[in-house]
Image (cartoon, rainbow, N blue to C red; front, top):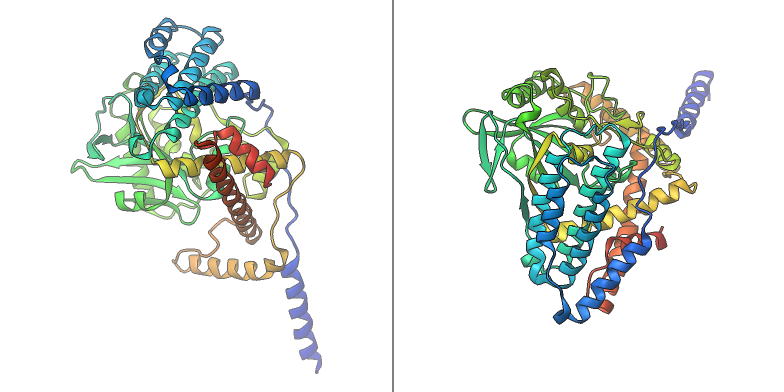
Length: 474
């Protein structure tokens, strides 16, 4: 081999070796906040015991205390977040949920009441400063707590009897509207959803206030009644989608939110925000913001599409931000490219009293799958706090880097960057694959164990049992 050949061979060896060199991960400093914890395993076990006892003796089912709950909620009008009566109301609701789960004759009534109560609670909290920890924690306890309780009820109902949609008040809107699934949807409305990918579960659960949603889409309706969404996707950045495309992406749940008129500077703000988002999306490519930096408008993640459009209209959608203060959670999120541990999480909007819940859609099969996915991620994040790290197959790193180069070339010449999206490194892509495989194996094991549990006891395991199962398979 001549000198030139040896140089070429050496260059190829160096290039090949370089492709194997791993990234040096940098751990982020966790947010300086306190993670929420129920810390009530005894209480959950007591509720399950009450459910089991009533289920075995259905003739002893007491009437649901819905009128008492409604009256006690009315007495909390004007109460602050630290008022001790909230805890009492919460406990009565949990007890009612145990009754409804065991005695399904009243289950639908309690499900409908939860939608009513949610609207009342959000209205009563309209003057709270939800950036203040006590207010945020109270809203989270009451809204997420009643959601969790009612979903346990729904999962014990016969699938045909489970309500697919729970409606809230049809809040007025000055913008153009259309009707979808027997629900009025208006320009400027916000759709929260939960995707079916493991990364969606990580987005929903990986914060100090683990939530139920992983994605935000802003609705635009024109004067002809045409429905479109403006949303940011990891794979392609900001896109405009019609109903078929929006519903074509797998979703485990969907919630429709609308700004309350008394929280707006003027009635036309929502439609103008939607118009601005649509104009920007149609003007040119907007890349996805993996760093989740809502201070940088150059790239957008899903929440930013809504916040950056409403902000110029004088509407601050994220008065309470998602924080990640757990060291393990912070480390894991940094491994997936997140650089900001105080940001705008999709689930935050569920606890924003300036928004009204117009409707929420659930499906029995998807609801159980969402609970399994959440339980697996909760168990994985517990492991992260104990020192577990995100893995990936390093032997696949050279091939992934070649795939990343090919993806970059496709994007540079106007195509869709695939298989590795714009802004995602080859290493992060492999970590996403690792999470998908690890999560999938654990979820399959939990589902199998849940079926055994149901066969032995006659009912689906509650969420805390799913978490226990996931821990065993971690």
